[in-house]
Image 1 (tube, one colour):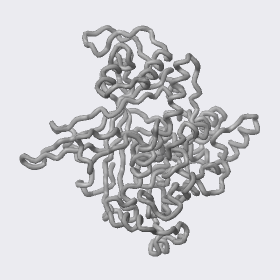
Image 2: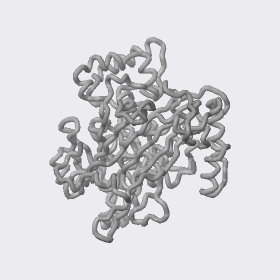
Image 3: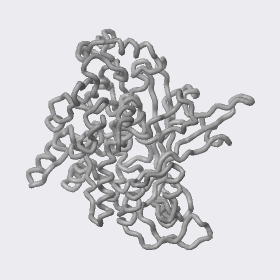
Image 4: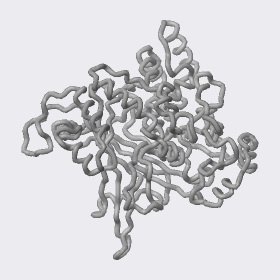
Length: 489
């Protein structure tokens, strides 16, 4: 699926079955906030693994590193009575409620223990990972996210590099004890929908589905879904390939459906305009989600161990979206623990809901450095401003989502700020060109080179003198590094 004839730029499959290759458990994530889905009333628990290799390239010489490849093993959060069997990994569970599960996870958050002691407690009879609470009988699926192609800046000069990430889902079949390729939740199949756009529009633009989309709980019918997807970087949500729904719906039809919805006495929280509708719909797809304020194509990679060389280490385990969503997820777990039915609503991934602004105070996650902001004319995004000392700049402007930018330092250019601004031009869906605001490319692309002009101080000159740190190569990691490092969540 990688679009390159140079095999040296693709993932080398020999690493997978090498004796030195393994999958490291990098995180266990509570996703009880997904309890609105029909297959689980208590949501999900995810074990996230990252691929690690130690391969002998030459006799006596091994190279070792973690790769941008994660696997998420997804469990039903509510234990079920497993059938009797000899294996000890599936003990029979007693009747457990969602409140019981939630209380154990909240208790885990109160423990002040050393890592080894915490791990032991989590697996103890009192912890949320006890055999009766989480075992193989609850496995539902395996989710794969892997970088399959990486092009250097010299090969893809306009974007300063290029990467492609393969996304797939495999559902667990207990009858055969195998994982089977399956349709991906909310990942629209463009070919299927383009063959009958009217059918998709008719299905989506109903009161029920507008309501669910507006509250971030839409589940798209399987007949419109794909079995695999590829997201691209850099450029995030501004890249056409990451906007799988772009052009599939008629804007006039969406606008009429929203007006009719309101005329019938309904209310809208997020999708109050066509732009809001399109943005939230895209964020709910796999490609749109993974390329919105992520770490390249990921939202959770896990931090590397102290033994990893600092020059090749990941220090922040999750993306800005991951950390910014924690207050909402915790509120849902607390509602479960209290025996109440939680409000599973969520807004835009690109910007945390304003009701969590206080919980995120003291971090950069709401309107701080690196946050996604807006400087366009659509009223529903008017509050997407930047905090004190920051301005909204167009790092990757796009006609797909016009007006969106990134919060950067207002006075001069500080270390960590982007030094390249520009616009992504799309010749057709999936074929983009990055037009930098330098005189040469700006003239060729027909854009104003003075649009985002700003003073270049000593920090900027130092930044440009370090090619390995140039924004064009690290834009996706940069967006989350400073946010998460300051998050006290």
